[in-house]
Length: 254
Image (cartoon, rainbow, N blue to C red; front, side, top):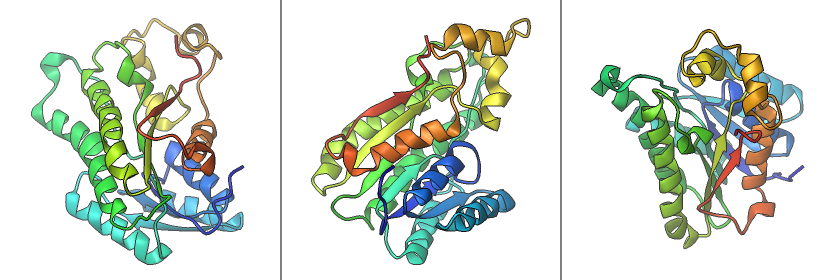
């Protein structure tokens, strides 16, 4: 386990799934954490309550990552409540499957405003409060490097995140700030469960559990805590010489 005592971390989309696991992990390692949520206030407060009950420190801040104004607001609120900002984990995102002919301009904007612009602006506003030694982790996906039916929009948004990380690395490196990305594969979350059949090409004649055993080297989906452990590594001193890179954690997705 890493030692994040005295560090303050902001996790976007921290009310459920991987984001909640990251918040719990960093808090258990000593960080004071702020999590953002868009509409699930009760879920966010439940995560905060769990962290506090375990002896950690956490707060929840409302904000929509598709709104530039709200991104600035929730970053500033997090800094006001935590007193500083050492770690940003930009986790909020949306999934999308759709055939080329069905994708609308609204679909495009929703996916890219959330998965790309939202992460860029969260980084931009967080860096204003960061000093030497700070760490940033954006969220890509193992899907960015795969050919999946009807997954173009989502995969393209995640590929953009990886390019953004590579190109921000030298700029932020001059300030002593490291930036990397995490690229989870199939993980046991409600978002993944809703898209499981789509990942199999939309075929309802395939059994998801059986197919997972065939395509995953480890024969199973990941657990949110396993993704959180990889994030904890990226923001720790153990990864001090790592920046501009994407760490794939996908169970050996063949």
